[in-house]
Image 1 (cartoon, rainbow, N blue to C red):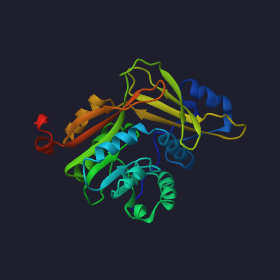
Image 2 (cartoon, helix red, strand yellow):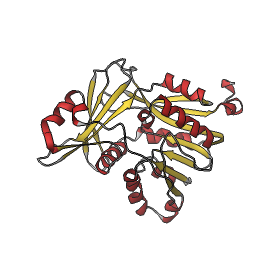
Image 3 (cartoon, rainbow, N blue to C red):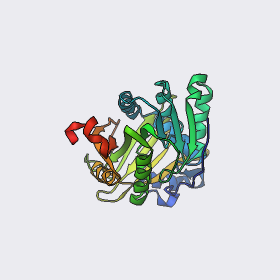
Image 4 (cartoon, rainbow, N blue to C red):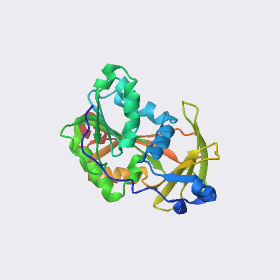
Length: 288
């Protein structure tokens, strides 16, 4: 496994005073017992990884799309490997890229228990989403878990430019986003996420209709008498229509969108598939 470049802190992390709604009230009531984290530090990376392990719908759709395209894969914001490990199981060569060494540490722990042949097919890279240069092109580039919502419009433009430079001719770019406003939901939703290992988390999503940001707060469902780790981040609202326009400006054309099932009352995630705009004719004649 190879490691490249370094990256900065999680600027989307909230403080206890910034967490909105019932989740914020609960955190402030706990006082110093509640420790608030983003996605990048050790405790936050562990919670985020657990949440992704409890969501298999995106994994199934990504694998279905990747099966149609032979070649190596770049897994952006790979985290602890909720997509990387299944992609490696397809016997693909995968570069798992992330800005957080704590998130990639979870992937390394999983790889230690994997067969040697699987470990040999995986490289890692420490990169920022909105600025990376890996010196090679990939048949498939994946950005899952709606991590595109962590970037503002300028950051997304830089990201899509990097993707355009790293995508091989005929390649696919798969990314997920949350389509706010698609369903009529209350301002704050709360749901339970159970991981394959049996952990249960309470997940709050807070979005005021028309707002440009939404908020994700997650914490263990069982409130202990000790320290309570809480993962709380601000996300940008990036619906499918906006994403399609921004990808087009970067020379990428959306060829399909797939709504992903969710448990409970939550805004609907969508998997978006795009190709280089000059590839749309031969591979997708209906778009020419």
